[in-house]
Length: 189
Image 1: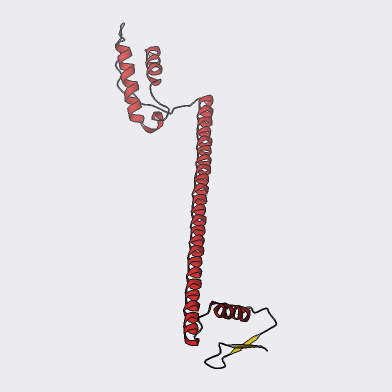
Image 2: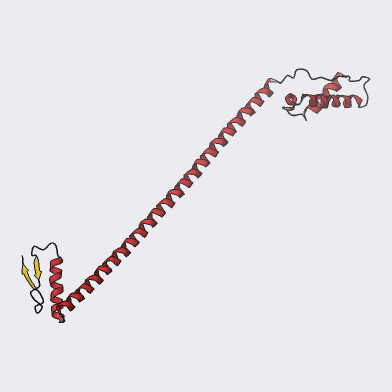
């Protein structure tokens, strides 16, 4: 009877997980009891009835406990390694995102600077055009008011005006109008 009971328990125990022995004790007792009853009913049938079946203190062999502990430690190491790898990947992804943001910032700054230079250049060109148009209109008005019609006189006036506008020259010119008949007179100051 005892050998058949041990045999039934050993044959059924291989299908029970290690954790089930500790977490689902009633289920384990029921499975082992049913295995013993089924084995006793095999021919030649024993003349005994299993009234109660209780699991007592389960003794785990030292080598099994060591293997279980090593497995738990290895699982913890694996989890730690996975965590470190995930953290490294996350840092690299963050670096990539930061780099893309910095590149986008540089692109926007360069674009803004280029657009500002273009706008400044357009504004400068427009202001030079406005000044040139004003000078032309002013010169035409002056020529008309002074009665200057000859091309030589217009060129001379442009030359004198150019000399006056040169700031680095030591010679300054004073232009004054004499009368309606004379165009203009210059003198060195």
